Amino acid sequence: MKKTSTVQNLKKRIAELSIELSKINEELDSIANPDKEYRVSGRPRIIPFPGTERFQTEIKPLIPYKAFPGMVLPPDIPDYRKSLQRDGLILLGWDKRRTEAGERFTAYWVTSAGISRFYASKQYEPENFPLALPDHKSYAAEDGIEFYGQGAPVYIVHTAPELMMSNPLHSELRPSHIKKLKKQGIDVDFKYNYLLTYERNRSGKKAEKAGA
Image (cartoon, rainbow, N blue to C red; front, side):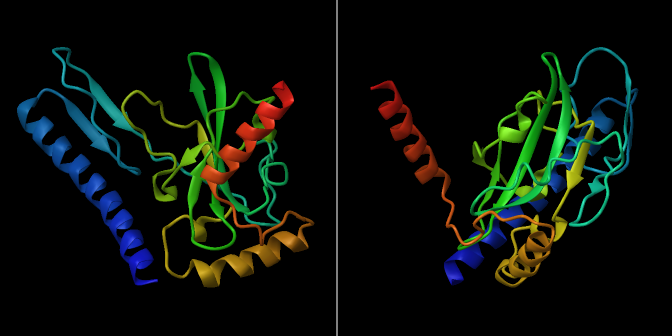
């Protein structure tokens, strides 16, 4: 338990340091390039690589849509809450991005049993997004943050924001959220101990049998 708490605290500190470094980089860049003007509000963003072109960048805050159990989303926001629930997982939310290939959606989860593990899907086309599955590990506190080569989300939907941070209280917070989901008719197996590496191996074996 102590080791798990140490790892969680380390992850949280890394996220905090990332934000602090981003601010330091911004200050250094503004000193080195006084002709550039940065007006930052809302989420932290990594500053673009310095160039010879003079430009002005304004970063608007990304305001997430709240979609707690029972809440109604705006009519222009597709509701994927029921379709994205999976055995052993609690849906944390999803985001929509515009890419060169078109609109893409990414889902985020935390395990519903055992140690809290965060996962994200790959980017899916709208028609295939309801079938999304975890693809890689994630740190939920970073959901929606822009990285090099990645555009900002058009929007992000939060279905369980209290579970997004790596928190030792998850063992207490998850049961109450699961209870709310069950009242909404969600009947997945929340007691299932989901582990991404195991699921990948199982999927690989199924694919081998199907191809045999």
